[in-house]
Image: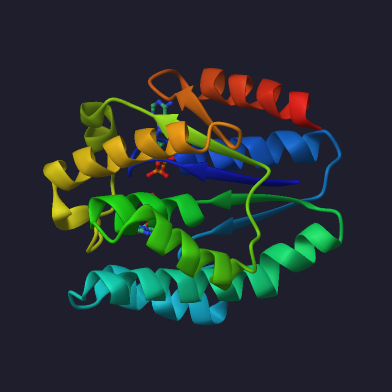
Amino acid sequence: MFVTFEGIDGSGKSTQAQLLARALRADGREVATTREPGGTPLGERIRELLLNGQDMSPWAEAALFAAARAELVEQVIAPALESGKVVVCDRYVDSSLAYQGIARGLGVDEVLQLNEHATGGLFPDRTFLVLVDLATAAARARSSDRIEREGGEFQRKVDQAYRELATMFPDRIATVDGDRAADDVAEEIRGRIRQLS
Ligand code: ADP
Ligand code: TYD
């Protein structure tokens, strides 16, 4: 089973990815966790370029995220799934659809096509989109990378983009209200995962 977490910076998705992985391990499941961009030696170098490097054109950005993702699928995600593990990924293709496809304006279909090639068509069984108030997210977010420094208006666009994606892919993307205690959010997510497995 392949599960991904999505949301704007500070939504609490990394926290939820960790809590789900811990709960699944407690249930005796073998779990592999990854983060994007990164998760492989090449991916971590690309992460550095993307988050701490110079400004770049939107397609260069989309292509670099896709390159890091291609490596992650081949080196980590596909082998883990083949060996029967549950894979829990903090961000995946929907991040590129929201940030590059919609917020940067490259187009959902165009960025989706790039990522279909990069991932060999591997899509999650379930994606949890953690939705929070923009002010809550801004108060929670700690790190500030090149993309986060785009500011509040960009975060608002990304938030809207994610909500659009949830309506475009209703069978795969489940939205959860992240404006609650982390444990309450985690409990709801575990309930929804049990329905799947
Ligand atoms: P993201 O990965 O979406 O950027 P994180 O999971 O890293 O968000 O959370 C950002 C910060 O907010 C962390 O300090 C985390 O402990 C805190 N946090 C996460 N979820 C909640 C929650 N439901 N309520 C309050 N604080 C939270
Ligand atoms: P990340 O380090 O996950 O941010 P955080 O830990 O704060 O949640 O992601 C880094 C940034 O990269 C984040 O602002 C979102 C952006 N991003 C994209 O624009 N496209 C992508 O495909 C991915 C995976 C991330």
